[in-house]
Amino acid sequence: MATVLNARLNQVIAVDGEPRSFFFNGRLLSAEDLTREQAARDGAERRLARLIGCGVAEGLTVAAGAGSVLHVAAGLGVTPSGAVIDIGNLDLDLSSAGKGSSFSGFGNCAAGLAEGQPLAGLYLLTLTPDWSAQGRAATLLGEVGACNRRTEQPAVRARLVEVQAPSGLGTDSLRNELAIALLSPGQGLADVPPGARVGWWMRQRIAGGAAAPGLTADELPLALLQIDAKAQPLWIDTDSARRRLATPPGEAEDAGPGTWPQSWAVEMQALAAQFIAELMEAKATAAAFLWLPPTLPLTAAQLARFRKLLPGGVPATAQVLNRALFARALLDGWQDAPLHRTAAHLHLAQLEGHPERLLLRATAAASDGASVSNGLGERTSAKVASAAARILAAGRRREGGPSKEELAVAASALTQAPDRKRR
Image (cartoon, rainbow, N blue to C red; front, side, top):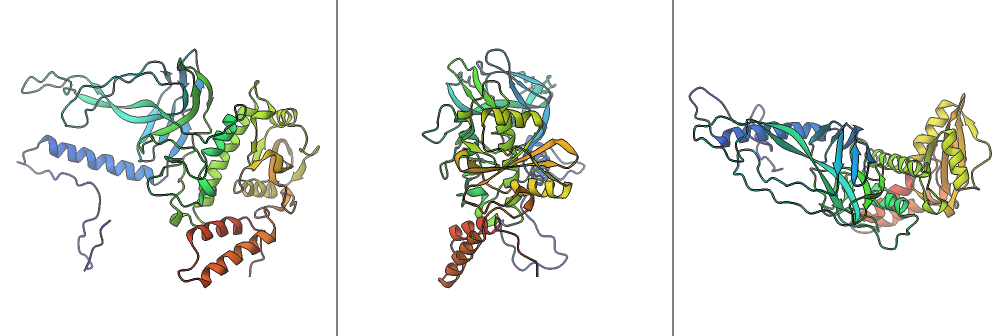
């Protein structure tokens, strides 16, 4: 945004945004004027939608059908660009691709190009907003070509965006490791180059993560899936790809203490949902779970399944917590990072008066062994907080102050340090 110099009170100052057409009696209207009006309206709607973030507000679940068919449930979501997607139930055949259209607004029309069947591999299933022609309009010149349409109905276009996964992923634990790789790098604090992120998702590999280079800001990811040569899904994970509607992570300079914990909590909630969904599948095995979410809200049936597949480590009895401590432990856990299963200590809590509401917390084996009931902030030892303070102190003594990397490491550690008494 350009800087306005020498501005005065009560002065009308032009700002960035789409201009709108000014209408008055006697003005000759052209397609350019009407296009400008449409762009102004669409821009205002997108800016309003971006105020609440991006992701899935409700519905839009994806399930496998017969053969290469996917069932997408009705729902509502917002793309990173601010476009609202609102659809009914949809049956999508991955083995057949339609033709794309290059027509937009009042521009010239062009023939669509047929798309081929997707190759076997890993993909994000996305929805992109579009427009569908409805009817024919009367014209002075008798235009009957592809441009002639009376109205355009809001529509969507489904697409498969190839995912570049980290190398060396295990066959059995592929879904679990991909769910980890699709999280924001560095607990949402790592320095992300401009253009590398679109909404919640990365377009290039950072810190060993996964990426979708072909993803655009107009697309809303709904599911991560692997398909075979016949375009039939081998498995589908909705929670690995989708995020609930919220403000996504910003760039490193915007990752202040009031922003990144909220976005990180959204990603940990998605990771927990993916873990539980895969856990409850009949074909699930212990080898499928190399990583544990920091927090798992469980039912009694889900806990029994966890004990069956991953025996050992889970306490025999749950620690009963009142509502305040249970909620505090849950919120605290959403700020922690995933742990490798071999390095995790498990703690089990139950909400007082509600035996069906359970909470499984995973903490680092090298931690001070803080109980799940200690609440917000009891995640790492005081030694970690002290080390972070030394990093900041050393950086301040240098010319230019601490680097971005030092600030990121220190912030991550200090926000996980034990609570201190308020002064």
